[in-house]
Amino acid sequence: MDVPLNALGRAQAKRGAKYLASLSPAQIWSSDLSRASATADYLSQLTGLEVQRDKDLRERYGGAWEGLSTDEIRQRYPENLANWDPVGGESVEAVADRTASALTRIADASQPGSLVVVVGHGASLTWGMSKLLGLGERVTGGMGNCCWSLLSRRGTGKWRLLEYNVGALPEPIELAELGDEA
Figure 1 (tube, rainbow, N blue to C red):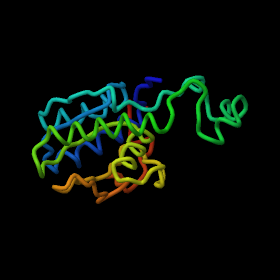
Figure 2: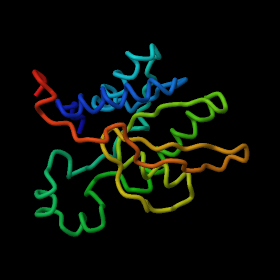
Figure 3: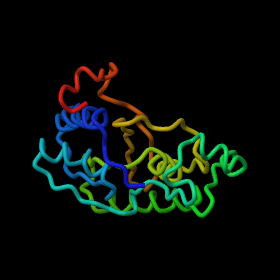
Figure 4: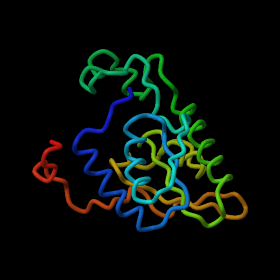
């Protein structure tokens, strides 16, 4: 579902954007879903770069799971949850292929050695990166909110994972810090 950022997400996005802006990115790409777009927009405001949106960076479509809590999914679809296979949703392979293709297109359109920020969603980005790295199935843990990974591509086209699930948020954000936004 296209769920907007809440107050905590906005605070995390603002903090992450400050750090990423200090690295002088050359481009910003984002999923077209509202929470990723809003996160990318904070970085855009600090860098003056236009956010380029790509629907192939969207999170996995959850089919019958859309709008349900984990407990509701566990009650209604226990076998599907055990295999992480939502009824009527996208398969892991389809999401990995779609996201890996988007990441490759973005890299192909970028200057060698430039820093490109891609804002997306934990599962789709993790599965897409795993595909690029030749890992087959996802072998890493999930990515945290407003965390990032750093990939590079050698001249041979082979991808390397340099950093995974890194964040500029060494301490948790307390709701008191959010002030009027909470």
